[in-house]
Image 1 (cartoon, one colour):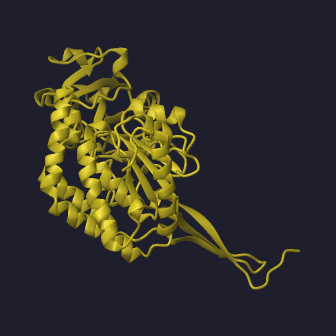
Image 2 (image 1 turned 90 degrees about the horizontal axis):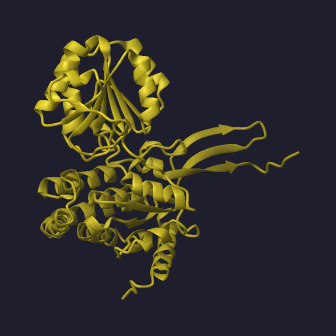
Image 3 (image 1 turned 90 degrees about the vertical axis):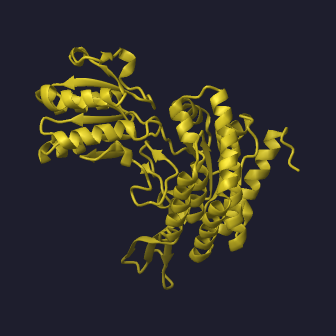
Length: 421
């Protein structure tokens, strides 16, 4: 029985066992990893009633804590969502194994033959909040990439994550892989997070997935390298050449499909030339859908639009609220996004190729879209099976972090008795 009161000792033990498991996973055969993920999916579907019951406990506590409807939606599991998690596990299982893939090879005049090949990172620490599906996604992707993982989910999803984790461990056991390959921190004590951030001897990278407070804490205090997933301050810009039907469909989907995910639109920018046509139609449709539109002075002329304050620009609502403003041209839209965006996902709706090219060229968000809902900002929708998060930094991994992004590389150099002059 682990001593939950001695957090440093608990975390040191978890880290030590993860490092040992990572050494074994680094050369685990692709087929064995696939078997583990398939078996985990089978176990999760078989035990879905148990998972849903555990989730119901979490949702009950969330209501008692008065969490927002969007946060409760992120937390809630039903049979359809569990089916989706199982599908993600199987999709990751079916992917090509990134470990050992040759990304470049060449020969030198000295006779050296050099290959650059993908290799696991080692041990990944994932710190996340209320989305229990992250337990499965992170566990699957790290395993696929040959990494051991330490999962520290939020207190809101404690019971759900425990039930899902048990299915992942069953998959490891069925495939004969070390059960310590996917470990879950078994305490709500926040001191465990502080320990993870300084475990430089056993954790190779930290992936925070949650709100600004969590990510800011990790970035400030981590001594372990971090794949930062900051806020999703997502913009949709309706250009002068926006198609009216596409504009309406895209904005409504981007804002209202699921308001609590990081790809949800938070700010609408409208070219002045289409304010009285496409712009008005889209704003009224948002209002009719129950979205609170906080607009600039120009848009306040539309009945139902409330005034936007300075704090509404660059704000992640994760709710049925959107900021909106009129811009004079595409360069004004780009300037606004550069000022208030978070380098996550931004979209232009236009039929003008030159405008789309300018938008893509002059912005440097991790994901830039044209004529597509920002709700597609998701590793699963990118064909990665799942994602461990959307990295908004510029080092190594950027955008959806899938199995391939959870690898580094090494050089394999071969000669035939070569010596250096």
